[in-house]
Length: 276
Image (tube, rainbow, N blue to C red; front, side, top):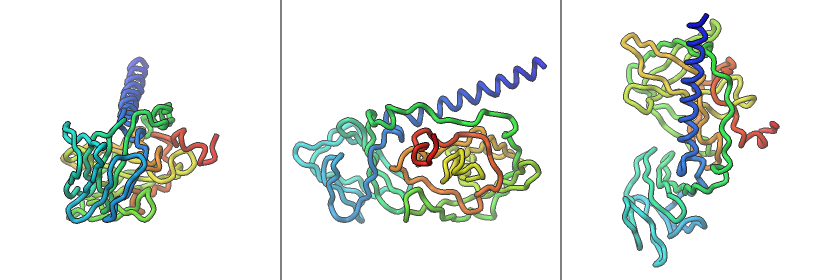
């Protein structure tokens, strides 16, 4: 009994430490809760009310023309006049300094975008954490990774209407919940060999964010075995802000079971979802 209580306490402590670190990153001074706008660039120079200069994009990449009184900080150095950022790779980006914060210059879904981030944004300063299901070992599941013969280009929708993302899916993960066989198409994770899955389930739009949740999976072992800890299923930035371009899960990743684990609908979305 003592060992069981110790294991349970350690499991809970590990989850609490992980969730604290996850929320600290989300609410960092220039994290996603600090984003104050989403601007789509075209070949026509445009001004934006919350940014200096006139911006456009084209074959040479993103270009800004700054007025005499305007300034950006690029790689720690002040920049004035005309500045070209060059072509930006898909899902790539860079950060430059602006008055009161930073500016993300990025490319999403084949289009160049600007996202200012300011630490005093009310979404960040008013953040009170994300509700989550109580962690339980029941939702730590064994799975098997099945690689495809070759990575499969997979087109998915986005939180922004009309936008699409294309990812190479290296394989799928097979597992079961209460005897129900399930599978999830997996994408590459943030570290070499690791995996990431986007999914919805029967809780989506009820207790969890309707569009998507994400789960990071450690690299498979030599026999393809993986662990799916759904207690660590997280919201993507679009669950908190309309200024995100998050990908949606592939159609086949809509699970028919209720995954009552991981992060729930953020407090910031309760009113729009009609919840108290």
